[in-house]
Amino acid sequence: MSIVILRNELPDSSKKWELACDRKNLSYTTIDLTSHNWFEQIRNAKPSLLLLKPSGLTAPYKELYDERIRVLVEECNLPCYPSVKSVLLYENKRFLSFWLKSNDIDHPETFVFYKKQEASHFANNNEDFPIVAKTNIGASGSGVTILKSKNDLELYIYNTFSGMGAMKRRGPNLKKGGLLKRGFKLLLNPKKLKSKIEVYEARAADIQKNFILLQEFIPHDYEWRVVRIGKSFFAHKKLIKDDKTSGSLEKSYENPPVELFEFVRNLTDTHDLDSVSIDLFYHNGIYLVNEIQCIFGQSDSFQMKVNETIGRYTFLKNNWVFEAGDFNTNESYDLRLSHALLKHSIEE
Image 1 (cartoon, rainbow, N blue to C red):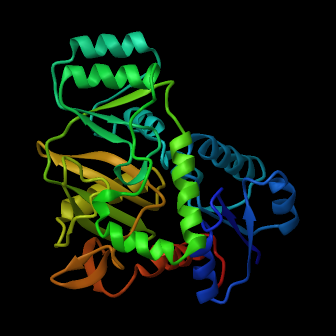
Image 2 (cartoon, helix red, strand yellow; image 1 turned 90 degrees about the vertical axis):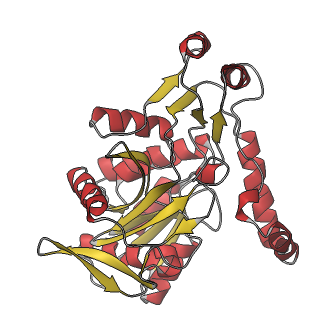
């Protein structure tokens, strides 16, 4: 058995996979997929499994990672985890909107414009405000802007196509709280501080100017975050803050409705997405898919709590069964690795 971890452009992006392998006493090789001799390194390693950490910081590296993974899996027939489809959907809101529409999956109505005049025509004829503008890449709400008027929309269109580019957060997430405490910790860790600054610089340099993505605003107080990893299901509510749930880090843990798990189970079974998080609105009696991500944040050590007990749900003998336990250690990478080994018939 030869496990190869394919990190992205960030030096620390492989750490969680490495820790998961170390905990199982599994040998592995870490390869930088952005290096010039990536193909030769991987071919020489003769991997039995590729563990992926797709890029979600800038468009150029996102495209690089996607292209190279498709070559390795679709042309070289190498097994990978998570799946190629989930990697392509990851941090690509434009592609996600096309994919949801083509598969008749309910979602907030989304408009993608590559021509300024078409976007301006939409602005002149749209009467539904607020409307949501999103950058194609942007985790934790960094590229989400709520436009409350026609003037806001026209300014956003101008900036995206002719000005400074689409609006997004380039620095630290101020909503996270504890800014002074986090800043002090970074000052005491020069290596981590340098890494953070490099991330902010890369995000600032990645300017979206060639297209615009607008989305129907769904009135909501929360959205559901549902995680599926193999047979394990988790769910909690992401609460709204400053008109947005993405990046708010405000959560509510309660017993989710069975219908929510049924919807996600059917969707993920149908489309072979067995290691993802899905964010959903419940609106007018239906679930609307807002995001699908194979890599996702985990600010708490768990993903679900029912009656103050952390655990997971599994679907056994046509019933949803809650099982108490700590299944999300190492930001769920331990569970991912167990599922990856089982899925690809690799003994631990």
